[in-house]
Amino acid sequence: MSGFSDIYGYETIKEHLQNAVVMDKVSHAYIISGGLGSGKKMIASIFAKTLQCEEGKSNPCNHCHSCVQADTLNQPDIIWVKHEKPTSIGVDDIRDQLVADMQIKPYSSKYKIYIVDEAEKLTVQAQNALLKTIEEPPAYGIVILLTKNADIFLQTILSRCVVLDLKPISDDIVEKYISDHLECGEYEKKFASKFARGCIGRAISILESPDFSQLRSVVLDVVKNAKKMTSVEIMDSVKKTSEYKLVIDDYLDLLNVWYRDVLIFKSTKDSNLVIFKDEISTIKAQAEVISYEGIQDILESIDKVKIRLMANVNFDLTIELLIMAIKEHI
Ligand SMILES: [Zn+2]
Image (cartoon, rainbow, N blue to C red; front, side, top):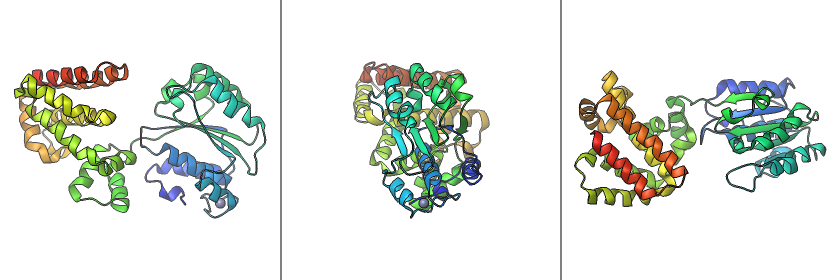
């Protein structure tokens, strides 16, 4: 049971999609681009549901047969394309589930809608296979590609698609979402809405994951104490961090936000721009002693960790080197 009014932010995009439905000017191919937790899937499924709704209005009616099926993911003409390999969407996935399937008329609805999540994983061959379909689709065929990164698409694909870019929404809207849907204190709300950087999904995981506040203290321990840490203490911190392997991106983001705070405070002296507001005195003290180059080096080291971990370099060693890099600069 949901409609466009359940989507927070993205006013222009909602308006565009709703107008397309009402004015019958729907494109055959869309790219919805936005970061993790930005709401790509929610927007795609509400758009698809609205397109297939038997009442044909700018919002789904939520009670017709099609809407009910869509809500339980049983609408036969809304197809979520799956992929076998976790790391790529190959030409066979696209040929079997989309290109060939689109030749078969819709089962019961006006359109046949294909949603490809994680479309940044499409191989070049898969994109080429897709291209022919979006160049000459049947009148009922619609393809929606969801991606974290639209840059990977071939120019020929991009030029055929309506590209909707989900830019970060304002902190106020994230805060409003939290107030409307989640229970938490005022500081948690502020921190989550700031740290989420315009992404509601991220705010939810910050507030709902019990690990997050523990992780936050592991990170604070590093940024506050790295300078005087002995090698035994560093190993101990690495060991604690390895318990959070699955959310290592959060660990790195927390570190990143911390040093961005130091950088922002150093250059502006404006404590309102700082996200770790409750740690302002430490931020202030660090901003005074770390050079701009030092902060830059630390931020680069944090980025490098992401690349190393993606390349499966030893986890403990990578984190140890990161803490040493921080120690060296503060
Ligand atoms: Zn309906």
